[in-house]
Length: 245
Image (tube, rainbow, N blue to C red):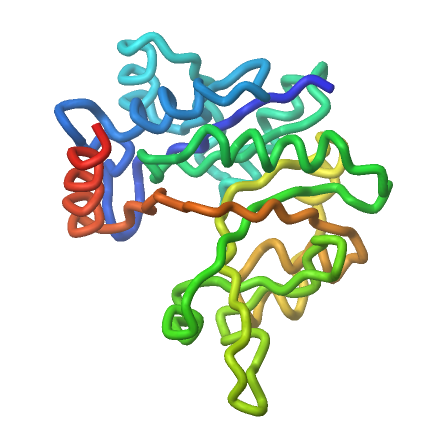
């Protein structure tokens, strides 16, 4: 199977305009994401998908591949689908978050390989998860996931799941927002209407489960990535980058 890695990157972020071009260790964040992702062995090709000429110029300047997409897309998934339409010779599309400069290439490989080896026709996506503390499980900003015995997602929630009814210490798993899609499903998924649970939790992946499809989950032992949504997050990423380089 041929695997395409796509990094959606918007300039007009509400909380942090121009975020992909914010500097970490003297280089734009999108360059760090691209260079880390490039190390993933599972990707046959990697590109940035953007709607802004400034990001296109920055990516071309450091030698990366970039595709201009429509500025009308409401979500990164829609932008991903536009790329998938053009790259028809790829079987799997991996959506890599453009605001995680410390993304682990091995996480990309684990997620892509989960979908490559899936022998269940209903498994159309793969994603990642990692164990967290019960305190973190209380945080609605951290999305949790529960799976069946074979590692397929049962539900994603901002609430604490599973709920420890008898005060026994449960096992809690944080969802890591890295996705691999079968290309044909991605194109269909982008056209599906939003669903009840998706709208309630504000989690797009619930649309997949509500429509009866399956998501295979790869468990990651050490998740060192950090999502950059604010200037404070950028400062934390800078500190972590110094500690790991």
